[in-house]
Length: 276
Length: 296
Image 1 (cartoon, each protein chain N blue to C red):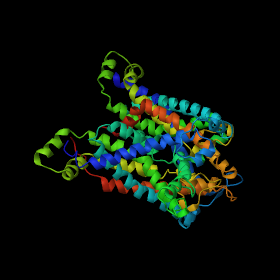
Image 2: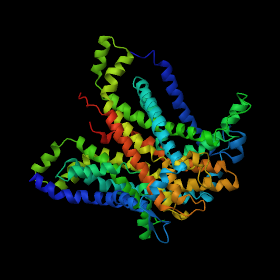
Image 3: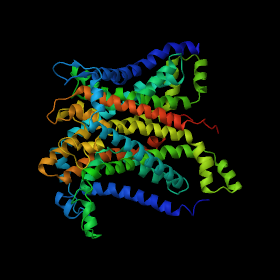
Image 4: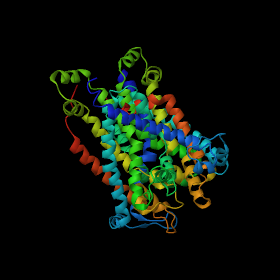
């Protein structure tokens, strides 16, 4: 095309960065299959034969198994419930059904700007008075709550982009708002709902600050907390980099797999709430 | 008929989400204001101290450093991320395999920031992989001390840029893709060069998304936390003050665990103070970037 020639070196640069990213990821996975000695002595050698010892270390010493189970439970439950709770609200707000609509939409949007460190202590104090700290229920509730601004905001934009004709037709047939929403709108809205679910799953999987403060029992910790714990433990015993890389893989690979599977939904989702 | 049913459904549809918003975001944010006016360790009695926590922040060099670091992230790393994202968009849009390339650039975004922070410790420690290569392959006698306190924050910014660039490229790309082809065909007819195309078509027609990017970056830069917390492999306590961001300062005031009692009031005050500064920056940015949207 027009600028093809002048961009050739730039294109080479882009592919170099892309290749470096892939190489970095591959190197992390390969390193996780090496003995700790080989990690240092032969950083470039392929692990032949590959060893799964590091993963055993990560599971036994680093508590990554328990943490992975907790992360899966909290991530899935909170993301599903966040979408289930946010979807009707976003729909109602997108079809501004009364005068309260605009200020409410604004409140949800404002909520996206509140950083975790502001609400960290109040949430901790509240959950601790309900004896819900260090419980999966407490963390799940906190994730649903903190997901609201973002999920409602994205879904409101998404519902706005859907044409209203189907709903009008349903209304002419005598369907009420709930019936219309459940039977007519939701089936059409599935791609948007899945996108928001996946984005929320990624956010909760990687969330660190709340998990660190709320989950102070090893039995209840999620993956980011386990990873930090393992890293700190190594300070005293000398870093077991093999185990560390295995732990990193436990944190990273599920997200990479998810992204490989539904990546388009994720990247499309970034522009869902932006109108147009 | 349609409207009456909708009116009746409005409250039950919105109420659960709004209840969660109130309980876990807006309510806690207001309660944080109350905590910020107290001196309390979370146990024992709390003392109302008015604005004293805020006064302490204004005079605390550690908070100044944290604020400065956050502003560096906001301005320097943010500017770099945006420029690289824009440049990538320009290159990617006329490239074969653009979606694959973009998705690979995006992947750091879905990885916990703890991971690059820990891996950096492995790569950049004095006997790490980078220095091994520098010594072995390039014969560098005295490779830089990457993880010395003075260099750490620069590395942190580079990692932050690496992690964010794919995200912003994706957003900018979506905006640029919406610009109809015929504008560029007109440019070609009039003999406009690449720079003129960018200056008169691409930038004005994707302007509203640029301001969205600025807003998103401002919000996310005051949240940068776990990247700094464990950068370089994780220390048992807190990382050195020199690398703190405002999020780290807020966390450390209560959970720093360096023998001093937790200061919940300082956590709340510093978090609100930095939120206030971010809000001011957002307002200024909106002013500066506000142009009438061009319809096309």
